[in-house]
Length: 429
Image (tube, rainbow, N blue to C red; front, side, top):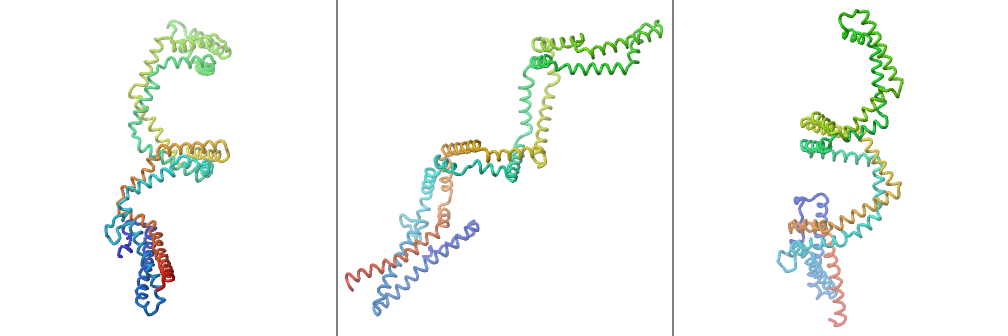
């Protein structure tokens, strides 16, 4: 009888809820055992005095039936979790001895009845995931939570990524997409389109205007150039006259170029630039010169430095942006999340598509991985210790099972007195 009331100690790693369950289980076991003891005492008293008081025969029959029912149900309940009285009776201690089979059966039951595409799809159709998610995303708290979790993901990604590896990847991309292709033809094609559309005319205007401003502000420089290049025997007044003449003619020439959009100089510049665009595309010598300039501009050390600076800048900017709730990136991201949530709530077509996507994804996952998911139950139960498994299950359902013992005591008593009364009425005594 000692095993009837074996306590489950809190030292076995039970939480507060499990401790309460263990206490309730002990109380129910004590109550069931107390009823059995009461029936035994009543049986002894009524059996001893039934000769003097014949009506005690009914009491004896009731107590006798109650003891039988209590003992039978105690045996049945105890046999689930352990050997009754420690005796290795066959087909007892069912849970410890058949733990793995129970786990496999439970796994199969969950797989066949819960991990079904039809069950999952039917449930998701009643949930309306899109609108629930949209309502949460449209709220400030939801958007901030998504932004916070996104920032954590970015921080985690940068923590995991190795800077040297990333720089190697960036360097490889630069070489493949920037250095490997020849620059001449694409530059020529772009230049041809720019020159054909006349977008370079504004640049020519700026250059001509700057030249006019320089000439206007540098009379002495122009005169000195004429003086420096004239023979020494030429009188100074002649140099001054020539210098004035050259300055006036240069000023008139630049003014003419400024005022006339169709000036010969402008046409010459247009023709030169168009020829240059064609040479960049088709002239091998020009293409080779551009490739040489590219090699000098972006040699190996420069590419490595470019990759390092690019990654360092991207990393620093992103980390600062995601860490600062006041940053433009954070504000734009949270705003986009709220807008998307509002669309999910208001746009029935979008919500329907999202719900369909979620249902399809869940159905695919369940249909493809249901054996693996259900296998978690079987594997987990298989790793449990047999006795520990028995105690876990008893802790969950043991209190309710004690009602079987109590009911068995009551039903046994009623059956005992009923059988005795019928027998006494039929056969006398």
